[in-house]
Amino acid sequence: MYKNIEEAAQYIQSQISHQPDIAIILGSGLGGLKNEIDIDLKISYQDIPHFLKSTVAGHSGELIFGYFQGKKILMMSGRFHYYEGYDMKQVTFPIRVFKKLGIDKLIVSNASGGVNKAFAPGDVMLIRDHINFFPENPLRGKNLDEFGPRFPDMSEPYDLKFLQGLKLVAAERNIPVFEGVYLGLQGPTFETPAEYGMVQRLGADAVGMSTVPEVIVAKHQGMRVAAISVITDVGGPDLKVPVSHEEVLNAANVAMPKVISLVSGFLKNLDQF
Ligand code: HPA
Image (cartoon, rainbow, N blue to C red; front, side, top):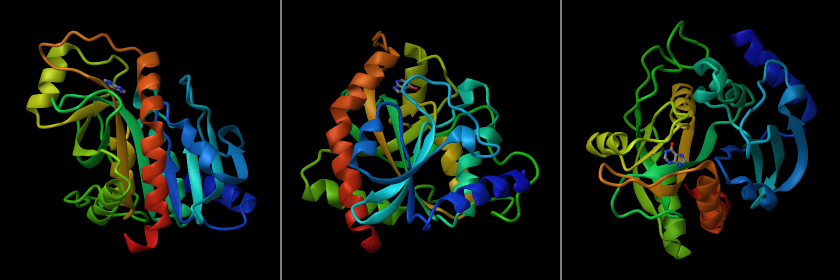
């Protein structure tokens, strides 16, 4: 495992001219963020040793290197999901490689279903905490001591200073944002009304099929994480609202300008957060 991570990192290192300041993972329908980057170089997943290929429509599969608000960015376009059939080590492999490249900051974005009654489709939720409801933990098995401890602290999975920074940017730019807890389920089914009810009662504000594994691994290796979720639909035990992948992408589109502005303001002042 460690050797594979090293080989992937070495290949990427041989292609890039400088180390990125921060990595950004693009969520469903949030590809518009790519247009904001002054692109230096793209590396297709298929060219990187031991990297997987992404299988979902709307996720392409490349690492993009460039500049955004003067910061050196590594953007991951196309992430791996547990529901695609990969195991958790595969899903989180890129996060290990990022650390090996010397990156210690991560912005994660995703699309999620809201269960907080205050939410509406197209809203943006800053993730303050999560509940791991996947059937597996990415750290299960032999601990990679080179990266972090056997029993990692999870008292602050999402960096509080980053969260405050995002809230500051939102306030300054008049971007309406919520703050809440994200619960990760394996999918690929969207939730039944009863499952939305369960998510609500478990204390989460939104539910989705990604993010939690990546954040666990990022925290294990001491990375600081900020996460932004776009609410694409709102469900509950008494709501029968059909959800489709198209609706998810449409709602993400509506929220796109807010997400771009948030990330842009955040990166601009990154050194202060
Ligand atoms: N559940 C409900 N709605 C969603 C999800 C999900 O996992 N992902 C994006 N919108």
